[in-house]
Image (cartoon, rainbow, N blue to C red):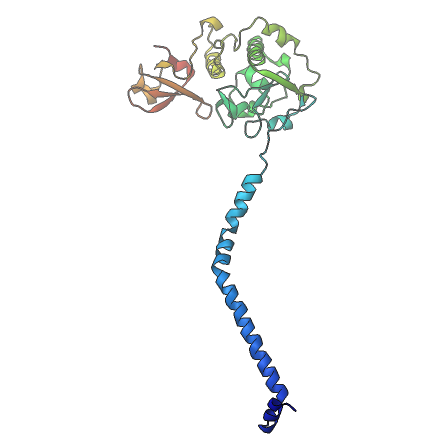
Length: 286
């Protein structure tokens, strides 16, 4: 027996218990040492954990694929559902006139969610243009025939058809009008100026529908060439006002935008510095 064992024996201590106790002490010391080593790295671990969301965000941002605009149908055939996706949000702005789908993205007057874009972006405007309607419910209206239009409405549609198909690119056909014969409109368009109708404004100003609609209601007999063309930034005089706006009679201002929601043109008034809304028939050049 070893001296240590004999000592344990003489003291009445089980040598095995002594061995276990010694090994336990050593194990405990090792564990504490390990924990102390981890403790040295704790601040860094906390920092890394806190910055992980930022790293993930930057990684996704760096490697995220940009959502590309949808391509036009390869066969050039749109339907109303496909056309609705070309409203200027992700894709170009398109609208349909007489069965033709037209890319009007370059227009300053047709933007998503505002002005004429609110009415016709991603929609068929055929009925609206023929009837000079600014009602949202008249977009995508298909329950009509060309025979339903009066001679003046047919001329109006031909003028708008010529305007859009000569100024902007035709990118397809609208399936809902498959089988329709637009020959009469196309022939009439040869003799029309863009926007031309018995009452419409002249070429190049897409505020034409509002002006034409107002004049049509008043039964104006002006020819297209005699119409007054007003564009954004023009100086205007207001007249023919009702009692609510009578104090502005004869005042001048600067034409801003057409507002379909308000049913008129916004004018920044020189006298008050505020914006007021007027019907097209109430505006003229100084």
